[in-house]
Amino acid sequence: MAKQIWKPGNMLYPLPAVMVSTADREGHANILTVAWTGTVCTNPPMVYISVRPERYSYQMIKDSGEFVINLTTKKLTRAADYCGVRSGRNEDKWKACALTPEKASALDYAPIIRESPVNIECRVESIQKLGSHHMFLAEVAAVQVDDAYLDKNGKFDLNRTGLVAYSHGEYLDLGDRLGTFGYSVRKKTGRRRKAAK
Image (cartoon, rainbow, N blue to C red; front, side, top):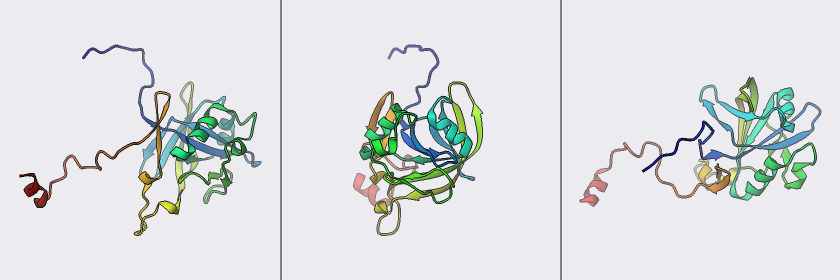
């Protein structure tokens, strides 16, 4: 198998395509779509988003120190794409996408998107000016989940929500489960061994 050498670039895919909601201190709210996001730490729970300084939401996040990461589903893919290519300077993306802003449980300014199954409420800890993007490092202040996805034992079934991923310019559903964490080293039960013989 031959390989080509390309110039350095971002080829780490797939990524989550999340809708980030924020607001300024006067209550003007906006949504932007972000793929440069991820988990940073478990304890304390921390995440990051990277945003271009020229984006309309950048100053809102910087001034309020708050944002909400709203996970995107198949039903929300069109809205996520729209919020990534349109600017809140020119229109109300909440109205354009028929999305509902609701009060966050632990934040003062940034609203959650009601239609998203998971809302991760974040407080900015620091801003790293990296180049084309600035990284907002944030502590998770609260998480809201849609109780429609709780099973009879109260366990949240995140993978039933219809999450999507972003890969090289395309939105994809997550597809079939291939395994669970640790399955490659898990010992087989006696019953399975007998069945395999």
